[in-house]
Amino acid sequence: MKITTTGEFLAVLPHQLGHQLEDCVVVAMVRDKVLGPVARTDLPCERDAPALAAQFLASLLRVEPELALIVGYETVPGASRTVRHRLHAGLRRAGVGIIDHVVVRDDSWWGACCRPSPRSLDGLVPGHLTGHALPDPSRVAAVAELVVNGSAPLASRDEVSALVAEDRAASAGVREALDRLDGACADTVDPVPDLWARVLAPEGTRGERFEATDDEVARMLHSLRDKQWRDALVACMSAVMFPLDLVDDASSMLLAAAAPAGPVRSATWSRAVLQRLLSLTRRVPDGCAQDAAAICTVTACVAWGIGNGSTAGDAVDRALWVRPGYTLAEYLGRLIEFQVRPRRQWSDVAA
Image (tube, rainbow, N blue to C red):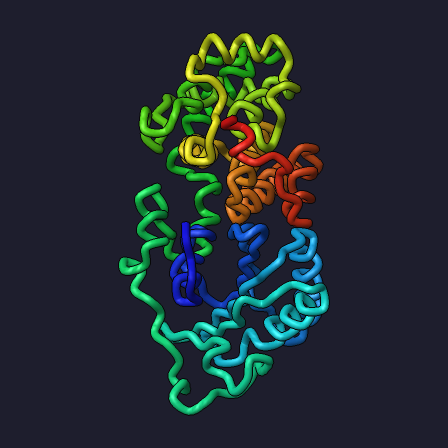
C-alpha cells in the first residue's frame, strides 16, 4: 500500500482503526518505510490534557517510530490543541520526524502547508483559511486496495465496542446450554476440535460469520476451560502471538486431524478467523464469567496479532470486567497499554 500525501493518509486512517474518527487525536507511526501502529486517544477535558498527552507519548515511544503523523479530529475548534502540541514536542525531542501535524474539522483539514512556517503549529497563511477538503475515499488508490481486502470502517467508536459486547437476543440460549453442559460433564472437558476447525477455516471458505447452534457454542466455550487447549487455539489462529512450537503434542495432533488446512498463515486469514470469533463473543452471556473471559481473551489475542488495537482492547476490557484477575487478559492488557507488538511478523509465519 503506497501513501504519498497527507490527504491519502487521512483517507486511510479510518480503515486502519476500523471506524470513522471524531473528537480524538491519532498518531500514525512509520518504521523502515512501513506504516506501523496507528494509535488513538479520545480528547480529554482541558484540565486532564497534559497528563493524558504524557501517558500517550510514553506508549508511542515504546514503538520506537522513525516518523509520525499527528492528527487532531475536532468538533470544537482548538479542542485537540494541547494534546497535539505536547505530542509534537515530545516526539521531536525523541528524534522522531514529523510527517505532518494536522487538524481535521467540518470535513476539512489543515496541515503544515497551511501555516506560516514549517515549524509553526499555529496561524494560517492567506489562501488556506478554509483548509483543504477531505479527499473522496473512492478516489484514493490505497483505500481501494483496503476495500478489496474487505475493509469497511464502522460509523463510530461505539460501534467497534459493540463488536465484543453481549447480544442479549442471542445469548440466552447459550446460557441454558452451558447450564446443561455444566450439569452433565462439569469435571471433563471435550476440546471439540471439529467445531474449532470451522473457525480456523481459510478465508473465503466459510465467509465471515460463524453459524453454530447454542449447544455447539456452549461446547466450544466449555473447551476453553482447558488452558493448554485455549493456548493451542491462539497459536493456530495467530502464530505471531503464541509460537506453534510451544503447543503441546496432544493439542497439535487434534488440530492437525480436524483442520487439515493447518494453522493460520497470513494476516488476511487471521482477520477472517477474527470475524468468526467476534460472532461467538457476542453470544456469550456476561453472567457466564469464566467462559466470557476466555473467549474474549482469545479474540483479543487474535485482534492484537493483526494490529487491531481497538477490538483487542475492548475484548480485554470485557474479559476483565466479567472476570477480574483473568491472567491471560491481564497480561495482554499490559501489552496493549504499553504498545508492545508481537515480535514475529506474518511474513515469518508464511515462510
